[in-house]
Image (cartoon, rainbow, N blue to C red; front, side):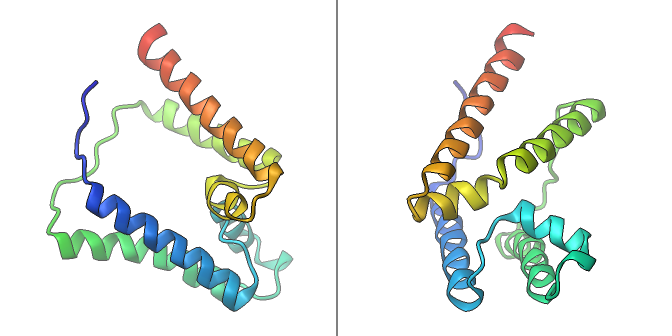
Length: 142
């Protein structure tokens, strides 16, 4: 197994920041930091009364990663090894999965597990199991 770009310090800092942002969102708005739900509500603003914090939260995700790249001096770009079709199909399956599970890894895995939700535990285990099977099939069977 080859491990590339192993950066435990930045990963730990990122995890702490994700946890803090989830706690702050619950403490200030009483809302769960589920990214798929936030994106869905931003894309369908007629269904939601207060879209401001959702838009700012998403801009913080994008702006935070750009700020980190600037601060750390990272100049390389991200390269995807999958075909455009695989990326589109993967994105569609991910969107479908978050819709039928009622959330994503941030909502279930970060916030739901912290609240000891059995539903979130089941959803997170199914996300992880599906990911492991997908990687195994793509790397070892195809």
